[in-house]
Length: 106
Image 1 (cartoon, rainbow, N blue to C red):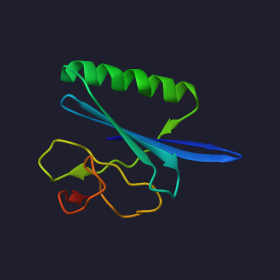
Image 2 (spheres, one colour; image 1 turned 180 degrees about the horizontal axis):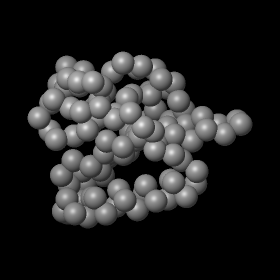
Image 3 (tube, rainbow, N blue to C red; image 1 turned 60 degrees about the horizontal axis):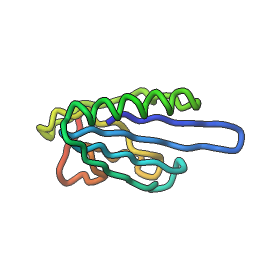
Image 4 (tube, rainbow, N blue to C red; image 1 turned 90 degrees about the vertical axis):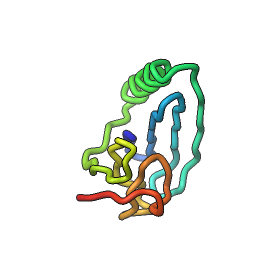
């Protein structure tokens, strides 16, 4: 999962994107909120990755910056989770907001 933030005088938002096989998941909202999630399934994993890269380019063009501090996952999925939005300051993520299926190491 990759996490991006947009901070401006009157706006403070986050945007996460995660590709797992054929599925692309985007979570977005105000920093400090749970946000909203959207999933889309593609015919191939390659098309899902291409769509993710296109969305990332669009967001960075609008001023979103990728947040540093990714942590390694030990959940066996190969994902590199990042920190959750401010509402969950210590929760690791591996495609979901659940800590029961993933343990992150520092």
